[in-house]
Image 1 (cartoon, helix red, strand yellow):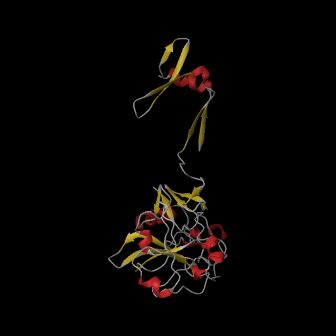
Image 2 (cartoon, rainbow, N blue to C red; image 1 turned 45 degrees about the vertical axis):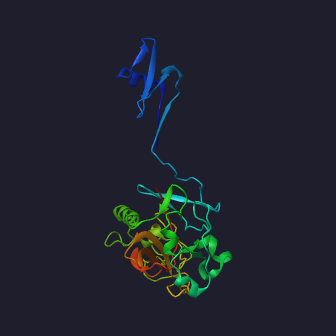
Image 3 (cartoon, rainbow, N blue to C red; image 1 turned 180 degrees about the horizontal axis):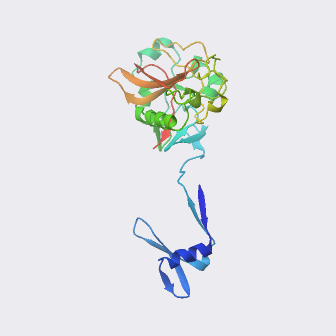
Length: 273
């Protein structure tokens, strides 16, 4: 929202108490938090913009590889509107790519892969799949952003529930449809489900644009079939061997939570610090 003040309005503000240098020369003074003062003659001002803070919203967010991402503001939070697909940490260090199943589930160090080990087909729509050890470095997201925590997701859910994103009109916390893209999902017959084309006003209402990027299992294989689910690591640990992740599925209507082994492979969404 933007508000503009004309010179005549400024004169009213001056009359209401803004200091003047001389009776003939009104001065607008801006007192900053660092105790400095900016003085501008009113006659030199055309208008003043008062704009709500949208720092980062709509900006071209880039990762260490130079990949660009759309962003979306949901409540007080600014989220990536796509899954992360970097192959480097934000300090420039490469993330090891691991394709072999046995090697993947034996890891206790950072790694990434592409769904079905097919970069050309899956990088752009779904992003990369990371183990939790990559998440836990704290260097996975672009500088100034972080891997979404369990609390970040709870704030997201509470905002959507409180602001009309329930696909069953508020009887339960069914916000999966609002989070999911309106394409790419296996069809479901239940109107509130992510995969249903009914209730179109709720489809991707939040702008989060979740796509069913699948996961890598604890034995190193990949989830099947495609089109069923989207899975995101949180940065929140459950215990020494497990961490929490969030997911939405084509035949369900809710955003759900589960814990899985840290060598499980999930997508990642980043949130602005």
